[in-house]
Amino acid sequence: MKDNIKIALLAIIAAGVVFMAIGQRNAPNGIQTFAPVAAKPAAPAIPPPSKSTFDPLTPPVQAEPAPYDGPTTTIGYKADKHDFGKVMQDSENAYTFKFTNTGKEPLVITNAVGSCGCTVPDYPKHPIAPGASSEINVVYKPGKQEGQQMKTITITANTVPSQTVLNISADVQVVK
Image 1 (tube, rainbow, N blue to C red):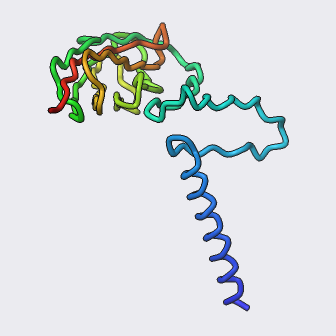
Image 2 (image 1 turned 120 degrees about the horizontal axis):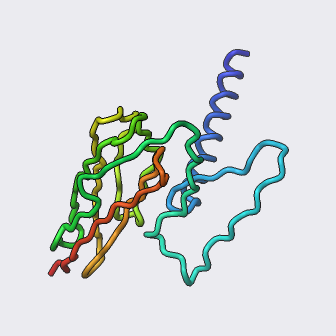
């Protein structure tokens, strides 16, 4: 009897793994979505982009983070723009934006999003004390882009306004 239970549990686990693998393979950009389980009516679905405008390199639209309910503060960047100058295609280019919490409350960054998948920010997930400094690391990978490129990183935090924009630019050279 115990062997039958073990076999049944293994079958259930295997079925779940297969379901998840199929869901990831079929989802755009590997992002898995599930229908709600609750009895509430589902939100209207957003239609997928038409095949003529679909770009697999463009990241999916991300939901706006919920507004911060706590006290607000201010943020000061040492620089809010960076020009990488000439870079090669398929290169990896890193830059660190330095900032200071210039307010009287802890600074909480809730999100940082690049304007495209080629621009990836990494931000502190812990509160930054008043007067303290920290960094936002950005990696720009131009892939096969060519020529002058300008990208943005949108930072969402408990500041007024709640979003600030950092800018990077580069002149991408074709690999010969």
